[in-house]
Image: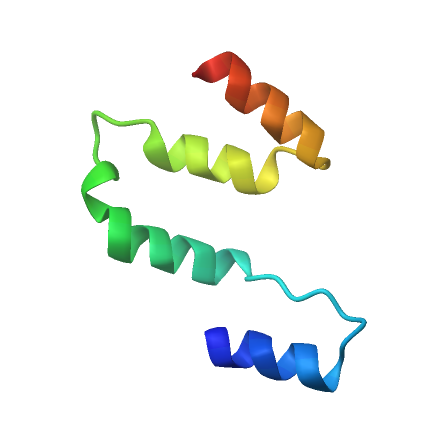
Length: 67
């Protein structure tokens, strides 16, 4: 993935590259799979972070109020 980001930056320097939600969820399952269980709201909260906010300030405010 890192190589792709570097290539995009080289070939298309004015384009912003981001990970798709499929890959975000795959990486979360791979590295944080133990947090996805019936007793945890982690999956729900992760999806809220990915899909629930349009602006970075909205996410930051929600994060600060939940901690």
